[in-house]
Image (cartoon, rainbow, N blue to C red; front, side, top):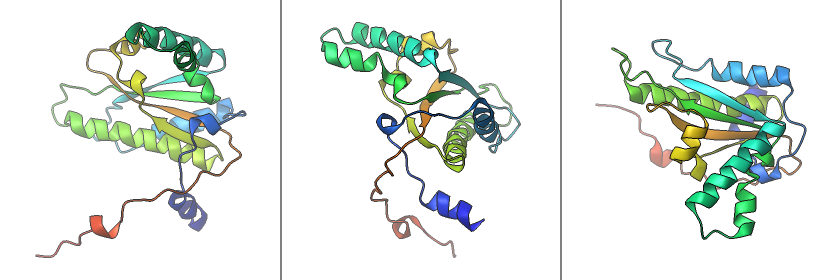
Length: 190
């Protein structure tokens, strides 16, 4: 148990550009997705869905991202468009997490459902860490593009919670300054 806590206390995002093959096997991918599916979910709604990009699908989707980027940014340099056209190829596995709340649920507010989606994202990161992979949860421009939403067939009530990149890595991520825990901690006492 101490090893698990130590892993959590040292968890760092591995930058997508630093990832490489191999990525998770199909069995490991299923473990990661099952872990995401086990988060607190008041009402057993499952207000999320996952879109998995691996193999050639990463390149195919990236090319579509590049075309959307170029259309939305006609003055962008060819170098930048090329970069946007290879976005998802930075890691061997990318999972788009889609928030899909039940807007009419009689007891569970949308905010609570969205928190559950965030917990699913975190469990993906932790499961990848437990399996020895690096992971990074990104919400770059394509997480907020109506054209990308359409490409992913999102319904009007859905939105992208982020794209989670997962892969092997060699360089240990640098530690970064964290907010001071004590300044955010208060023990309730009347």
